[in-house]
Image (cartoon, rainbow, N blue to C red):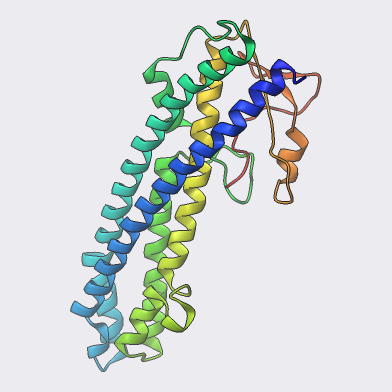
Amino acid sequence: MATINQAIVDALTQRLIDIGRVETKLRRDIWAALVLLEADLVAALKAGDPTEFVLLSRRLRAIETLMEEEIEPLITTRYTRIEALTTAALIRLALAEVRAVRRLVNTATEDETIEALPSEATVRRAVTDTRIPTPTRPTEDSATGEEWWQRQGAGLAQRLRDQLLVSASLEEPLPQMVARVRGTSAQNFRNGLMEQARQNAARLLATQVTNAVGEAHVAVADVNAKKVVLQHVSLRDTKTSLICVARDGKRFTAETHEPIGHDLPYLSGIPYHIR
């Protein structure tokens, strides 16, 4: 017969299916926004066509003007909207998760083990203020979700500027310049800058969803600290990172996050790495 702890793990694991549906819907919404951005970028390139100038110096100046006056504002605006959309959805997800945790734990224990729930303001802060790790240093407190979206927008703008300057230097015609943004039909449009932007967005979203769910669990534990502990559970498969394998099954106090029976630090909690 399964223990109470295993019953809780099983119930929360099953809930990941519902969470996965939320992530899928959000990813589609974000990619739809990036499709609109791609169309705007291509339209701006065609309208300000730098390839119409013969002199390289003139083409380069036209690209810089186009970037500063048209393209960078487009990217900033679109990524600001994506961040706002994502944050609002993640807050809703976290609020639903705290209620789900109470229901699932109380069902497994057949008791009112979880009585109190964190305030909406607490959950909101947990989602928006928690810093997400960097790709190169997984356990480092790096940046909030909002800052990460700003970085993605800035990164796309820089890569686009670089590609346009290279294209102009190679004296490519406008269709080839546009292909650097969209990709080519021969590669199913997966070799352009916007495909990289979509994949970067998907990685960040997956990390943010994990963060929102994890912070919801921690917030519930914090207001019921006398009755529960935190336990890290990793879903073990061939893709599970060494970081998460090492923490699988490890327990921490709910209030202070001190290790229980081991010496691995809690650090900032999950996620411990991107995606």
